[in-house]
Image (tube, rainbow, N blue to C red; front, side, top):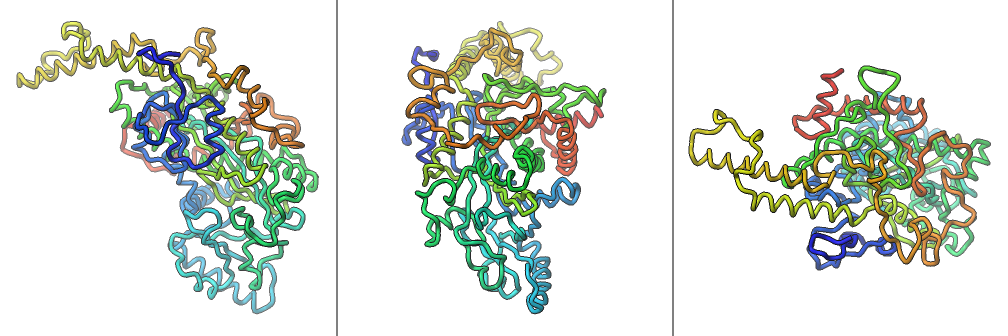
Length: 587
């Protein structure tokens, strides 16, 4: 594909704020060219950053560009804000949000924590076991830094600064693996926030502590390698198991392998455990979906005022009502269409333009002895450091599958640049007499001042030129029409990008130099038993929202309805708030 100047178009990735080597390699293997650090050209196709992004950053995105973060996602990736949102939802739907340990935000709920610790004093003096324990975590902390366990008020007073921390209840009786406490890092992809689309990755990491587990007491509260599973803490522990050991004894193991062992020991199906984890992921994102949708569309609204290619608002019922059903019917509605393997994962099934943002989230899940999964925290930039062979296998495949699922092509950029050039030419060279008469202002609508009249006529001519350029460019993204490939027409097939010398993206993963498969691992979802009819798989991703299960769809619709009602009305003109007001009028 060549641009308007005849130059060969290539996919360019901006990795200026990404430090992980494995990601740089995966980007190159997927056909991208990495932009030089001293290059300031903003016509890249993909930006992958280890840092969060702002609304202003999204407003500068062009229609063909993709960014690996949503603005506002820190609302569930900061421990304090996550606690506030889930506590709010738990107060309204206690049965649906019982997967999150009790969490107190300090200093706001310091009195509640002090009251709980005072109760423990009498229990400890009486010799009681299993005294309630709280883990204090910095709200924005990572890698286990600044974490402390407390049972008494005196232990709390020994912590120098408890401001901006969260006191999370210690999960009693955690499930053990070979006598060690463990949790699992589960990866989920938010491909679109409005309409919401979430995918669960087929592999993750189980992380083990390095000291044999004992219930927390005053004697072992400071033993971080016993009670904490953070790899950064246990990596340098002298009692840690060697990383060269087999996968059955290493401190990191494939999550699918561990989940299969847990299911076998508990005499339950692996699919049932995966479904519980998927429900936790979906409900956590649903708690903040209205806020994220508003924030995302606010950025798009600002960007639309700065670019010539504005997008039309979507009128799909799934955008107006949480249950994606027409207000005239409670049983049949315009349900989203599941994406096919050849459809970009950011494509919206309702027909509007693909999401400019996507995000990989890392969910830390802990099981107790009753096989109840608990959500510990959410990571907006899960670590892609590769200290072991298992790290490289899982994370390289995760990144590669994500990039291939995006299916970016140079044709998108070429169409955008062609449209911009035509629109610019129309604005600069179109004669005033060629403006559409029907778009002219009536004489009564013109100001009385001659100077202002001339300015109004010039603006009308400019707007007419922009409309003609948008219509004649043939680029469906920028004129508000539905792209042909949304309807499945043969003329709208998306050309696949080159993934190396020969072969499809799927074949490329299996060639020498590609991503090796995990030996003896069948994934979290694949091989876990009968799958629901119509379940969508894109590479090793499985769509978990919207769900194909009617019962879970009704549950999620109720959760999203509560979250939407809890989100205060905003006096703005973004697409989400506009649809929300329209939906209330229609209902």
